[in-house]
Length: 340
Ligand code: DAH
Image (cartoon, rainbow, N blue to C red; front, side):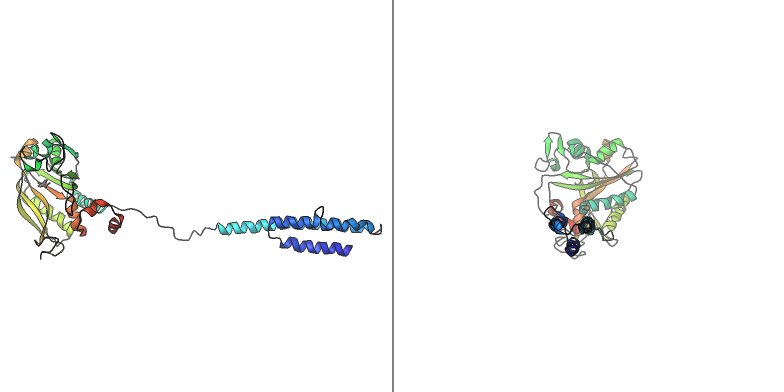
């Protein structure tokens, strides 16, 4: 009987030590200590022992019950520790690993060029002024010495909202608004959207952007105009950029000129981009017409000024060698990410 009890102790010790789950551990405990367990079964034959031996065997049986219960408790603790170790390993966080990169957007190429142009002008003492996109014909045309019959006012070319209200066709209207509010010295640029009834193609869009410039003061000359624009071109296109001033006509400047830069693709030889000319037209400019100053209450005998209007799409395309304006508006990320 004692031997059999010792065998149960050894069996239980091994089985509980091997258990790899809480369920298995409990099943083994029941196997030895349960109502139908091995210990109970063995003790049923306790009565067949001589009475003198019974207390000692009974005590051994109690010892073994306590031993098995202790082994079960220790087994439960061991399994708990194993489970916790596994969980900690699974949750381990290596704080030395490099982080995942968050992909950030970037400025649109036109915004980049506008920022650059704005920097160049503010460094020369200009401030930035704004005007409305829905404008009256007076600010956009009449005040700019552009009379009733001028072709620029044609309903074919301009979006009319009513008889006297349009989507501005040029940022030049901001010149008038600014000069009505401010007296010389004046030094502003005014970037913004303008609208014309143009079909969309590689070089036209019904909505595009201009940067207007206006300087008014005492003794402002065409020399100041040339130097200002040459400074701009060299800052944007590089110090070797050559510019050319070509006579032109605008109703609100006298004299007027268009400014070309030597082709940035062929360097003046003549190619597809400059259409064989060697030069690319970039902007219009001139000395503010005396009538325009007068309309704004500025005495043209005392003050003079220059003005210019730059196409933002055009300088952006030149700056990045983009050959189709539509790319700037389609916002295809495969295109835009090239300018990150
Ligand atoms: N407004 C002209 C255009 O849309 C550009 C321009 C030319 C602006 C001469 C000016 C200027 O301020 O003096 O084509």
